[in-house]
Image (cartoon, rainbow, N blue to C red; front, top):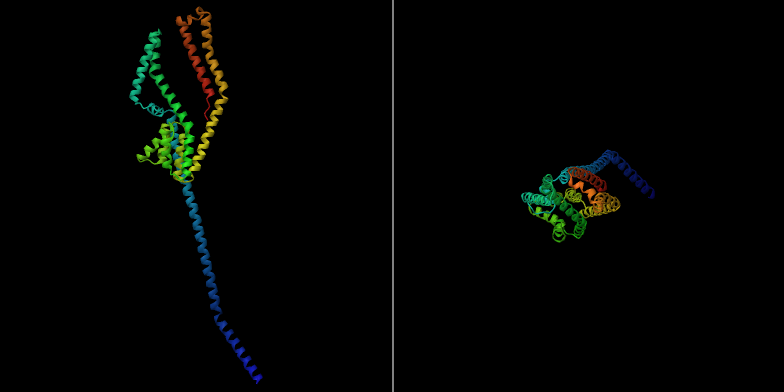
Length: 337
């Protein structure tokens, strides 16, 4: 009984193995095909993923190149505008000089004041007993020299006052931006609270914005009324930040630090050049001191210089040469920082 059951069991096992072998033989090609299809699908998915990565990388590179080109174009435009403003700052027209000096006078009224100044100086020279050929020179100096010198002096003094206060204004803007205030409110704060002439210049930015200009464009126009490199730097920083983005507080903080370093360098150069300036003052004043001493000790010896035509000619030539020497020494002692 046991033997029969073992034979039947063995037969059943062999029959099952035979059926499995036949089924595997028929299904082998299908299983192989399914594996190949799976590998192909995996390859396609990997290729699609790699393609998406490559495309994203290309997009990033293209965006960076586009942004770089935009910044370069902006820098070129700003450089051209800066060159134009610098050329105008070196030789601005008289109307621009009057505006930069902070004088609220029209060009026609300035010419009127110049004519009055020339006439007054000519009458003073005439009543002082000056020769007749000196009177045209007095008219020229009073009509053209003194008024324009006053405008130039007021302009330089206003620029100096602006540079003394401008870094503090930039620090206030930096702190306001870091605290969360927008740039418009920070500029308006400077226009209301800062001392002159910084207050007036930032007030012009606010007025220009109300007229339709943007803050960057209005900042670039600051160099038209404030002829200094620092004002141009401020406009360029605001313009670049508006077009290329970035941390405005950090950019303005760096600009403030640069301006303070420039101010320190100017003070250092001025201190180092004081010895040369003192020597120039002594050399320039020496002829006048000697002339006064000679007049006090021997007036008859020096009076022919003032009473004779030859003496007047000698005095004129001496004045010309003294003026040339003073201008040369002044040029040697002034350094651009």
